[in-house]
Amino acid sequence: MTNIRNFLILFFFFIGFIANVNAQKDAKGFAKYTFACTDYTGGRVCIISGEGKLLWEYPAEQCNDLWVLPNGNLLFNTGHGVKEVTRGKKVVFSYESKSEIFACQRLANGNTFIGECNSGVLLEVAPNGKIVKKVKLLPDSVNGGHAYMRNARKLKNGNYLVAHYGLDKVSEYDPEGRLVKDFPVKGGPHSAIRLPNGNTLIACSDHKGEPRIVEMDKSGDIIWQLSKNELPGIELKFMTGMEVQPNGNLVLTNWLGHNNLGKAPHAFEITRDKRIVWVYNDHSIVKTISNIQLLDSHGKPLKGNVLH
Figure 1 (cartoon, one colour):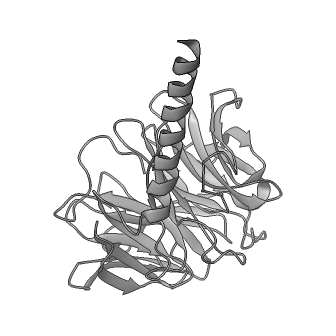
Figure 2 (figure 1 turned 60 degrees about the horizontal axis):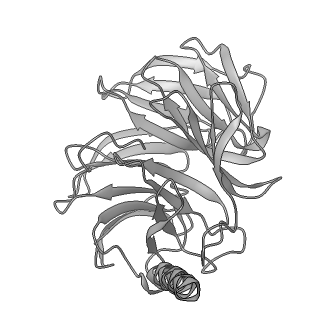
């Protein structure tokens, strides 16, 4: 009986492992979701169907951050600017800067939050293009450079959460730009999400450390992480955009720049116990994905508390 029980345990473990690996090998698109994404290297934003077909695209240089708004429009950065574009490709909001821009966010009041990388400035811009708030993280005489900032978000409490890629830390600032808390993390943080429990989820790139996903508590201690080679058949190259689904699953993008084109999946969803739900592994449509947003069958954002 012991031998039979051991055989069954090994058999079902083997079947589960093969199914997990095959799921990611065979995936050329989602079986369930349409999604919008940024093709940073290809210089465009795209919408791709659950069957893996390109449904929509729009040119966007160095596109890094993207939102599909409730009205169906897409909000995204464009290298040195931010645009909101309708599905009919009409520009309804535009902001341009001399500074590189990698972060944008539509706020509840209709204004747009923008993070200027080189200048180290956080902006809130009205729909008519007028700057209604400006928070300076760096003095006028200091240029933060290309690596100073990647994604940034305005939090519900009015503070700002900024991923300082080149400084190997995520920082929280109050509404006036005063430092509240630093979260040092090796690997060049690209994106950060404040979770409902107060913890901070951080996507790390390949800067002075291995790419990974970490969750830090309020004290800055790592309480959960996904390391470079934990998932069968998926090697983390440069972790960028993230979504936390209402069920707690994580949707992650794996940027394939820095000589990694075609060498790993673009994006995948995992459970918190690190089981693979699906993998997007089609390199014929997009070159590198730095951000993603899952959509419903009508091309609208998913319902529920999705953190992006």
